[in-house]
Length: 456
Image (cartoon, rainbow, N blue to C red; front, side, top):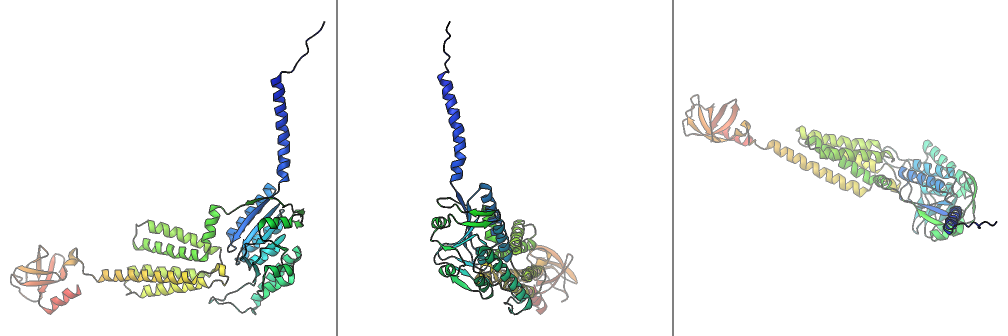
């Protein structure tokens, strides 16, 4: 007895093959992805601030998370805050992902804090026609002028900076002697000189060339030796987020100074005109943003307090008849505070523009001189409404004043008396005083009445 041979239906075979292909593809995809290295590029263009330090820290974390082959810090900076620089160099030394500092494009520089960041990098590179150097810390006295470098405390800080950068140089195998010159003597060299002096590792005209040149190098990271695999790598540029861009913008000392001035002006308008609301709200926001920015910068806080005191004097002059003395004092305080802020540091990237200080000071002075002039005119102007508006007004006697009678003034009939004696109906009189509902009048042509009219 024979049995029919079993057959697997065609559609089941198709489903089985498709499942096998999907499984195979899922195993191959990670291998293909892993075979394609990626490099994350972070752009540092401008002053080194806490915002930049946070941006670099975030970029290094992202690179570690996605398994990037390297991080490139494409840098063009005149320098910045030592605290932000220390945060960046600490993150570089703690990074398991190799960090390449690339001073670019042509014409860029790595000044001051940029020198330390370059020395901390696992690989240091520069584009042609760039320069590096001038890493000397600058200290200011109370007047805002550079202090004598022979000062004992200054020497301690410089020696500390030298020890720090020499430590970077020894860790990365770079020229420690020139690094000390950059700190002590503000030495500055070109890209070619930096390569010859072993300050950097290579010169590359563009990023793809740089990645080709460093491919295969072995560097020592926090996770141990890592061999760079950057040839043909996928380049992913991670820019600052909108929030980071905004806070980096207001970290500009000139922007912070303008925000502080506008904020104080808004608060002044609110105090001078209670209930306006909008000037007060905007003024408060601007002042808080300015204080946030100035709080992350090396500033002379006496200058900020002087500017604030100047605005207090402006407010006081609105309510106190000082004949402009308070406004002049306010302008002087505002100008001196502005100069102190401008001289808080000699690092060009962290200085308030002299032009900005001059323009804002002139505008503020002009605005408050105008305000004080308007207030003074209002105080001197004769009242035109209410009973006070009758002082100096001219009227006619309707009922003989002996010693009291009635006068017709400003379309109304008023009880009146006169120190000049009896006055006949029809006499033209001028109001010189008012007591309750009784006017004191004098003949219009008398000297006392004329003086009262001019005084009103």
